[in-house]
Image 1 (cartoon, rainbow, N blue to C red):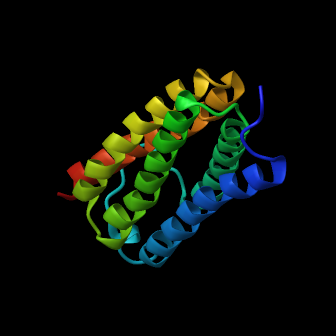
Image 2: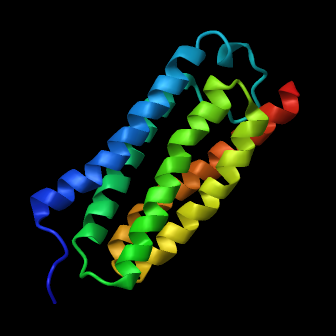
Length: 160
């Protein structure tokens, strides 16, 4: 079986959507933390703000490694489908920050984060059929977005 891409090209192509989502998410999030987000009523279990940066950095690294492994998998319809689902969930990943933080709308955030979680699970399933490790690397991401869904819903409820 031939490999789909060379290692350097796969690494570059794996990094681009992940870094783009991280940068766009930060642009929408960071300016809204000190005033808008600080003024919201938070639910129980809401972590301190400083924890989000390290957690998301680790999750984005895991996403990039998982995507790299899929890009290096043999070409075929399963790989194409896995790539498309991964890219779709990355688009929703970045969109959530704009919906929740930039638009100051926990409700709009819910409309993004619920399909995001579904697409993460779909990505894990698609990746599992190609590379078990790539799929397992996304489980912490799915768990964190599940927790973020609780936070998002609770903030909507408490501040609505």
